[in-house]
Length: 464
Image (cartoon, rainbow, N blue to C red; front, side, top):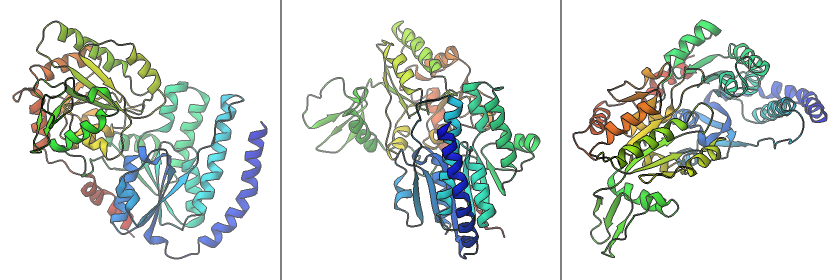
């Protein structure tokens, strides 16, 4: 209770100062060429907002990017002379008192802290805000916009209240309050972007919010990885992760070998190993909207099929990402004793992740969407690398994955196991379904983020 009173007192003392500061700053000129991008989360794990910042900078705007700095963003962001990153700090856990009180104190702290940080930045024409998380960011950014004359642009990735509902239940008072908050303050924005047509229709029908669909598109660096770069990545990862290490040392000391490739150090020629394992990749935030027990169950069935004599390869399953449930699933994985499936759960550098996707044989997506209205960006990135995908089905997935055309859709471990068996039978088969999907992706001439952004977002921020 004392901590809550302190936070309220701090807010009461700080607001008059900020209002006076805002009155002065609101009269400053030169805001039209400046945009503030706000992520009340880890900037390094928010690729879409990084892309917004880069696109704005490339279009002539100066950009201030506010967010937590737990993971390194892309080098292009760090090297741009038009982008300034302002690091936010997280409130340490109180470790005492009811959870509701702890959450309330955290929200109050974030509100005051974000308000102070925004008021200390140069006046901006627009404030771009990622939602979720939007509590308390939507209200704070709206207030700063009112004080400084900035227009609030909300980029709806999902509904925050629906994610909270996975933990607390959809009828929990906190979830209902979060839904009211999101709906009320969401209506106060000037512009709204969203990730699917289904979300655009839902916002219009249920919340009276008009939004523009801006599909996630792969950035230009998501592409197939040349074989020599694949080998370099595999050798780099082999120093830390045993599944990338060769099972046998080459007889020729001038040959360098990973689990998948080898290079003649004299000629520099790289080739894929005969009988190599297949590389399966999935990425995750390790949250409640992704059930990795489906993948584990499917791989156990795949193991049984391999032992029964089917012409199937061994698998290296790489699951990248950070998140709250990572240790839970790592414990489950450690209890699996599979002879033909190896697991690896790394956190990759930003520049290595596209290289891994471009080197893999199959991607698996277990994102089920708490609202049923957002699409998994990981599949977009995989498609950019011409990587075939198996994805768990949900309401609007058809806007991205067309079953049997550019990938496969499954509902449970049984279906996924059957798809793995079909795709990897006689691997690597140049005439198999896996290569057919890859050929389809190569020929689809996918639209990239920069071109899509110029078509959809740029006209909105340059319209007078």
